[in-house]
Length: 308
Ligand SMILES: NC(=O)c1ccc[n+]([C@@H]2O[C@H](COP(=O)([O-])OP(=O)(O)OC[C@H]3O[C@@H](n4cnc5c(N)ncnc54)[C@H](OP(=O)(O)O)[C@@H]3O)[C@@H](O)[C@H]2O)c1
Image 1 (cartoon, rainbow, N blue to C red):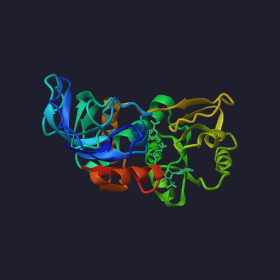
Image 2 (spheres, rainbow, N blue to C red):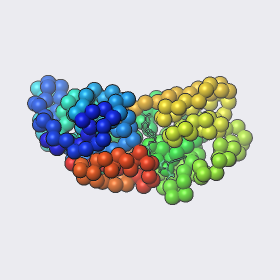
Image 3 (cartoon, protein in one colour):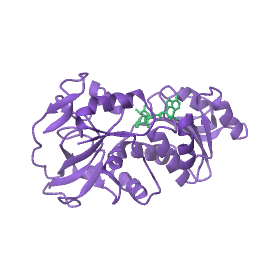
Image 4 (cartoon, rainbow, N blue to C red):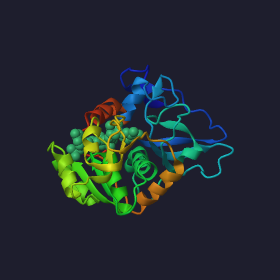
């Protein structure tokens, strides 16, 4: 089968000719991939720094959307022909940038009707991350004030939407081209992060006290983010750079984990329009290297997916 990935850890991304998928094990399904998400986390997999269960030569890709074509003997919830999406880690045989992928059936959920393959493929990792930050780490409550640093990004945008749905007052940072989208997502105030005084502006917007909770989604952005948190508040970062303990602020260093029940709830919100996501670019598998370069560069405009 055709795939895109690496021949060795640290190698360049290229088209690969990999063996066709094996029959599914009892708890597995085989998915014919329609589209697969591309995130800068795929570069961490490429270098071998994130172990997703595979060794090269291997397809990259940890988010998938496609159609079930074979079902293991013990799988009860899925049938051939079901349209599904997921973040199916640990990967069983190959990554998701491939024509077919064998996955643990318990880690994929049905694609909501009316949601495109592109959006379905770009949704699992950012949506799960956003929910795990707000619900599991920050335990954000209705009426609290939340800062989202980097709300113009895919994950930041979903954090804003989910926080607004929880009834929080959201203050966000975003660049000029993302201000309107961030406000529409539910942010009450949007500050331009190019103004280095933005943490002080956040404090002014909260009566000089600081926000109850904050999320950093920007590499190197934690030290600024924590400045805007009130004494004894909470902060989460998704870029692996937690700041030192300060002023009684609790800090969570969050890494996404697969959770099909949570993903199903998020898909329900996506399906009925309470969550939305616009894909920035959909490229063919042959352009996987370009797609990865694009997300590493952090170009604004929405998530990138590969059409398989
Ligand atoms: N820990 C985890 O499990 C986990 C999960 C998902 C993502 N992540 C990480 O989280 C980060 C964000 O991921 P993503 O996919 O959501 O990113 P993304 O969509 O690629 O974010 C790009 C956006 O970041 C904004 N940005 C760039 N520099 C900024 C700055 N200095 N201050 C504020 N905003 C800035 C820009 O928005 P504007 O348009 O506003 O300029 C840009 O459009 C990445 O580092 C990713 O690896 C971690």
